[in-house]
Amino acid sequence: MPIGRLDHVNLRTTDVPRLVDFYERVLGLKKGKRPDFGFGGAWMYSGEDAVVHIVETGATADYRGDQQLEHFALRATGLEDFLAHLRSLNIAYKCGVLPGDGFGHTQVNIFDADGNHIHIDFPPQENADIAEFKGT
Image 1: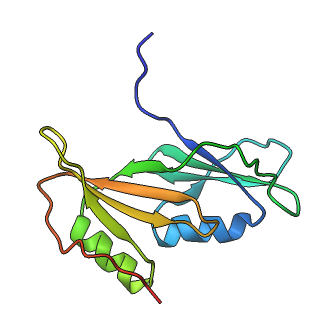
Image 2 (image 1 turned 135 degrees about the horizontal axis):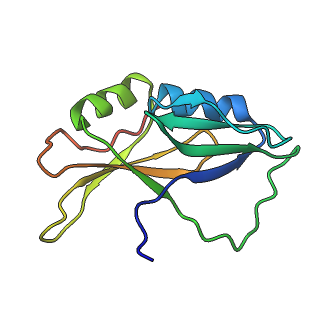
């Protein structure tokens, strides 16, 4: 059984509307159809694919100290425009370029409204000023 690509990431939050707003404004995802699970949440779509599933938790998110997920990554194109978009929203970012033959793509590292680390990967042929932007 060969594994294909990552299907989606599931995020828990106490504030679904805040995360929906972030993923719409910052990453251009769209809130879409979601099964009625009997609890709050939202599915965020890129085209026809629900790539971020948001699940509403109680008054405080029940995070464990031993959780190991450090980040999730999305692929995109349009590096220069994306960085300008982040600056216009005052979203801090830090970029890096993967070293080595066959890699070389640019990673743009940001944090969502709940502090989840995301990096967005852009093809190596895209160029832009990738100096860190600290926001205010």
